[in-house]
Amino acid sequence: MSFSAPFLRAALPAGRSLSMRKTLLGFSALLALPVLGAQAAPAHHAHAQHAHPGHGSVVEPVTPPEDAILGTINGQVLTERDVDNRGKLFALSTGLNISPDLMQRLRPQIIRQLVDERIKTQEILKRHINVEPQQIAQAINNIESRNGMPKNALRDRLAQDGVSLTTLIDQIRVQIGWMQVLREEISGRGRITAREIAQREEALRAEEGRPQYNVSEIFIPVADPRHSETELEFTKTIITQLRNGAPFPIVAAQFSQAQTALDGGTMGWVQEDSLDPPVVEIVRQMPIGAISNPVKVAGGYVIVTVNGKRTIGHQNVTMVTVRQAFFPFSSPLNPQDPTDQQKMALQKASAAAQSVHGCDAMEALNHSLGEKHPSDPGGQLVLERLNPQMRQVLSDLPVGQSSRPLVSTDGIALLTVCSKGQKNIAQQSPSEIADSLMNERVEQASRQLERDLERRSVIEMRKDDKTASAKPADDTQNDEPPAKKPHGKPAPGQG
Image (cartoon, rainbow, N blue to C red; front, side):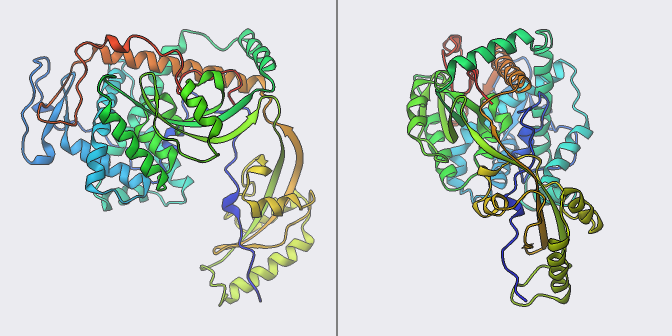
C-alpha cells in the first residue's frame, strides 16, 4: 500500500475577512511573534529604588554588572539586564543564532526601543489604564494555539533560553495599553462618516488604472540628522538578518518605530503618492519578496519589502471556500513502514472519497472523526495565493466532489470545494474603506502623541555608555513633520 501526495494543509492560510483589515484593539503585533509568550505577571521595576527622580543626575552603575543602570527616563531606570533580556528575546523570536558581535550592534536600537516603551508605559499609567492579566494571558494563549503549542509551552521555552519572563510580559502590556491610549485619543473625533467613505470612493474611482503596492516596512528613526552613522549601521545589520531568513513581521514588531509595527510592518495596499520618492523608485523595481537596501527618508531610514503589485480597480482572483475531513494517525507516519492503523485510515479515507459528496456531508464526517483539524480550514481563500500543489488540487476539483486522500505525517485529509467564483479584490467595500480610514486616524494620533511625550520627557543616559542616545537638548529639528513618510497615512486605495 503506497502513501504519497503529502497533505498540504499548511498551505491554506488562516481565514481573514475581506471586510476587516484590522480592528483598533487587534492583537496583530502579538500574532507576529510566533515563538514568544508567558503567563501574566506584574511589570517588573525592581531597580526603581536606585533611581533619583527629578534630580537630573546620572546614576552610578551597581553590581552585579547585569544590574548596572544605564540611565533614567523620567526617573525610571533602564538597566543592563533589561537590554540583555530584550536582546535574548529578539534572538529567540527570529530563530537565528545571534553572535555577541551582532548583539552589540543591535544594542543602540534595543536601548532606544526600551526608552520609547518606558515613555509609553508612563503615559498608560498616567491615564489610569489597567491592562488586565487576563488580556495578556489571552494574547499568549492566542500565540500558542496559532503555533500548535501546548499551554504554558512558551514559559518553559523562555526559561530554557534564559529569557526573563517579565521581558515579554512588559512588551505585551505596552502593546495592549498603548492601543487603549490611542483609542482614547481618537474617541472625541467621532466615527467614520458616510461622507468620508463617499469621498474615498470617489478618489478611488479617479485613481483607477494606477499602480498599487502591498508594502511592509521597518522604520528606524534618526535622533540627530547630522550624525546618523549609528542608525545606518543598525539598519544594515537588520537587513543582513532579514536576508538570512529572519521573519520580516517579527523584526518589524521588535524594532520598527512606525505604528505599522503593531501589524508586523505591513502598510497594506498603497499607491505611489503616499510614499517618499526614494521609496517609490525602489518599489517600482523590486521583485516581490526582496529586501531593500537602507532608504533615507525624512526622519530616518526605512527598510521595505514588496508583498504584491496590482493596478487600482483591476485584480480579478478566484475565491474558493473549502471543507475538510481529517483521519488522524495514532503515531507519526513512516512512509516505508506504515502501521496497521495507518493502512486502515487510508482505506477509510479512500472509501469516503468515493461516497461523501457536498460540504455538509464532509463536515459531518469530520465531526465523526473527532475534528482533530477544523472542518473549515480558512474561510474564503484566494486560489492564486495558495501553494502551487494545493492550488492544483483545488482548481481541478469540481464543486461538491471529494478530493483524493491527501496524506501527511499525522493523518489523511479529504477536501471538498463548496464554492468557487471570480472577484475583483481591488474594489473596496464601504466597511473596508471605513477600516482603512480608521487605521489612518490611529496612525496619525500615535505619531503625534509619541512626539509630544518625547519632548516633555527627561531622558538621561550613563555618560560612559557610548551606545545610548539621550534626548537632544534642542529637539526643534523634529518639529517639522515630513511631507511624506513610508509609514505615514496611506493613500486612497489601501486595502
